[in-house]
Length: 133
Image 1 (tube, rainbow, N blue to C red):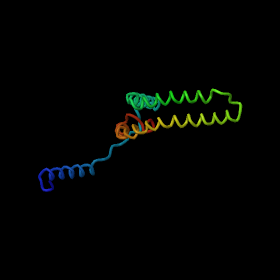
Image 2 (tube, helix red, strand yellow):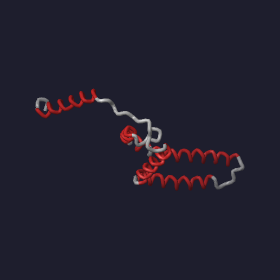
Image 3 (cartoon, rainbow, N blue to C red):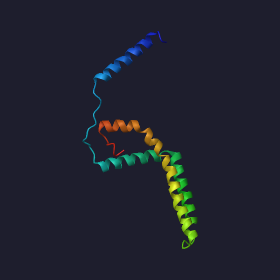
Image 4 (cartoon, rainbow, N blue to C red):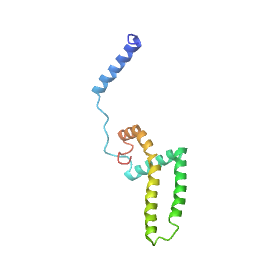
């Protein structure tokens, strides 16, 4: 393959693109935005919710963790909280609530990282600001 004409054509094409990239200016990010920052955030949040709602594993994890968490917190907060043991149970319930809410949120980090190319493209084209993302 190293001596073939296909390899030479590819190398010439790559070299031509490299030279063309050196002579052209990088894309400029406009400071003016077509939308208000709050409407940008609303549109992005709505789009992300629609995309995540179509993800069955994420949706199942969110629904099941919410049901389990509500049952567990109902059991913890059922008794009398006027004693020291009730205060310890309340602190434990708050810790559990924070822990259970963080685990499903970790599943949302993966699509945000995967959408980096979309972020760059839409920021450079002026659709959304980086702050809205």
